[in-house]
Amino acid sequence: MCKKIYLLRGTPVAFFRSLFLLVFGGICFITMTLPGTAAAQQDVARTMEALRREPLTETHERQKQRLIAAYPDFLTQSDYYPNAVQWRDGTIMLFEDGRPKKNFETLLNYPDLQDQMAMRYTPGDSIIILPNHDPGRVRYEKFFKKMYGATEAEVRANLETVYWLPGSINQPLLVTTVNGVSEKLQALSDTLDTLLAFQKYLVKPAGTFNWRVIKDTHRLSAHSFGIAIDINVDFAHYWGWNQKQQGDYIGYHTDIPPEIFKIFEKYGFIWGGKWSHYDTMHFEYRPEMLPLHMIYLLQPHMPEPLPLRPLEVLPFLSTDVNPQYRESG
Ligand SMILES: [Zn+2]
Picture: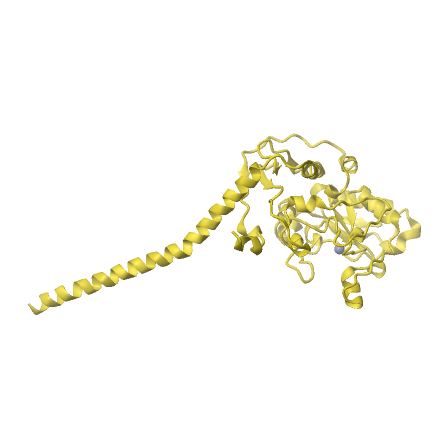
């Protein structure tokens, strides 16, 4: 009898305790996972909506065409999505994410491919320095990681030795073979070898490949991808050094003769001396920043038309999005 009473009394207690734990646990689980799932669904929905956006403005369409023309080994037209570039492995990458960038820092930290193309780089003798006009300094990092390698080991696997100024110092430097960058740097180095009057700017190169973030940022330097070279630091001017010396004012100065940067440009390299945040020893392979006629001259052959694999759309993940926009939903 006693035992029976115990059972009669105990069972409901245990039952309600279990029920409580089950319901409470369930609520916790749903509360924790639902927003994540909803955010992920929202990301995919936003990506699809952005991909279907058409037509691109005429300016944006021209920028997209220049990007595709500059990287024929990797990129091709997307017949399905006007607001995208299609990689030859089938990946679709959004061109214009439709999010206005509130300020210059946001632009550098959260760009899309269109932002990368937006500022006009002027090749040749002209040096046009306007506030926050840094054509080529805006890089959509996923684009470079996919092309040159997403980790140090992946980038290293594509590196090759270039002999810098073989006629004088013949210094080995590591540069990527992707997009023929090493061949191009070797060819332009051979040309620079003949500029005897300018050797002092070119000897003692300050570095090529170096997997690192840009100082005081989370952004990878172009040196991480094996596409950049710094020439002699003794004749360099860098906005960051001057900023320290002169407070907020970034006094522009360069000693680099146009003969040097014009040769780099001919081979698809842009010069950091054409940025308002200038870095006059820095050059990087960025053919998409050059005018179309210069891009075409870089390509000795038209790439083989490769069979396209089925489309794979890269969702535009919340991690790409400026937190300001995430908060506003
Ligand atoms: Zn550099």
